[in-house]
Image 1 (tube, rainbow, N blue to C red):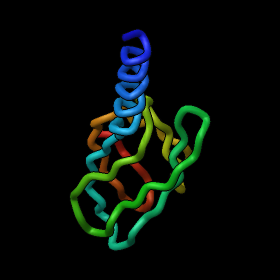
Image 2 (cartoon, rainbow, N blue to C red):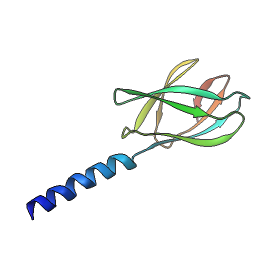
Image 3 (tube, one colour):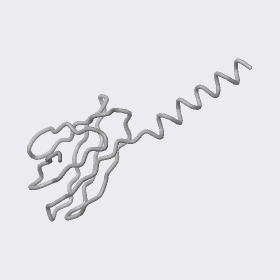
Image 4 (tube, one colour):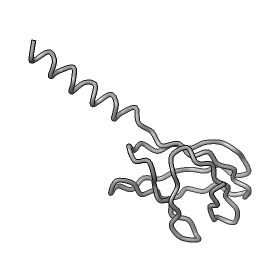
Length: 93
């Protein structure tokens, strides 16, 4: 019984971590696609923003805030935030 309880606890923990994604809603006002570096919890990932569109992009992390590297420097963005991209720079709306 104890072994079964431990197994289910570990399985739940793993599923919860796999399912966590950080989502950013964006409006890219530039006619250029962007791939930007994202820093969270000590790791680095890439995120893509399609040109001249409104959409959303996700990265796998359990953090509630990430930093995105733009041509204008690093920008802190919270989970679920809506941003606009103009001239390669991010503005939080």
